Length: 208
Image (cartoon, rainbow, N blue to C red; front, side, top):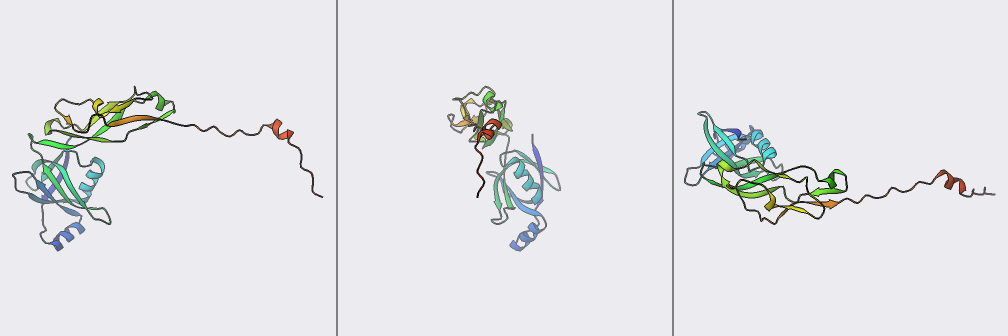
């Protein structure tokens, strides 16, 4: 799925103007591509912050540049944040042409539930949530889906087990573990004294 964001020509040039621009709820953005002149734009802070929060930096974006609605396919290349508030203050996009090879991270989505997890005797561990890939724009997947319903104790799922299109090259080492099972220790509940045991206890003598 291609997500759409909007930008427009930047209205600030000096540092003071850029500060005022950010106060108004906008951040400077630039669009770069090897061999092309850099485009200097601005976009709504809320729009780009929400996108990065929900989709990260590895998703293709259809960037619509107003007022002529010029469209470019881009990815977030770099994000600068305020060191105190962590609010986005500047963004650099990488323009992606159809023939460009993309180097990015793609998330792993697990489906199914191993029996040991289902019955509460184990918990699933997945040390990484995404893998590095390279491919052209037309083959970039939204995510990799891995079925782990068959996983048993002592087995692991590795990067090499991820189903993927032959046009996509996964560059994360194939022996990297993406899921394993860890046994769950169930502590026994402390036994409570029975009525018979309570009655058998000797009565305490009254003082005096």
